[in-house]
Image 1: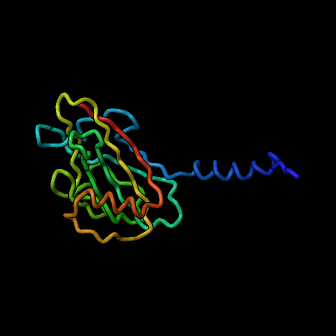
Image 2 (image 1 turned 90 degrees about the horizontal axis):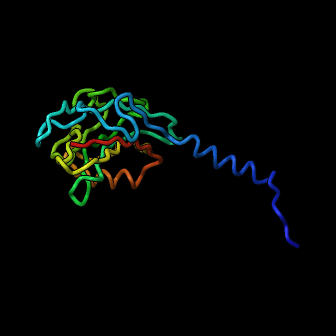
Image 3 (image 1 turned 180 degrees about the horizontal axis):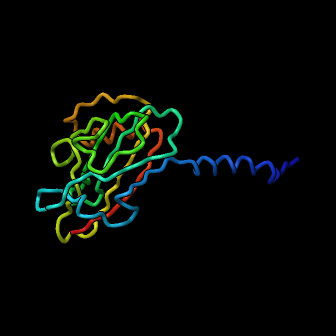
Length: 180
């Protein structure tokens, strides 16, 4: 005998799945917008670039259960390196912190800033090669199950990325662009 599941039985199940995706963690910024060009304020100062090199304001909401800390990364997958370019890595941001002000890197950052592909800790702004076209800058907030990740400040950004991906509860990404 064949049994047909009624639509009324499926609706609560479908609603549960929709509810999960509707409550996904979100990242926003007063300074940068999804898919939009960043201002020169967020351009690197050096290597042929002459911006203000300020980290953008970032906020995040809809924190998943089990979160004990956050990390933030900024990554350019379009850098002509074969492996992208890490512009910012911040670990051990307390779970009570739900935003960072503009220019937080180096002075107001509540977490551990680790080495970027510029060779030192702290935010390194956009600096794509002239004529290389538009680059994407992925600002990601990571919800993590540990209050502290025990990595040194001089760790490679690839190891930071690997570590975050191995334990992330949930993440949210804001992708801005830049071109020179």
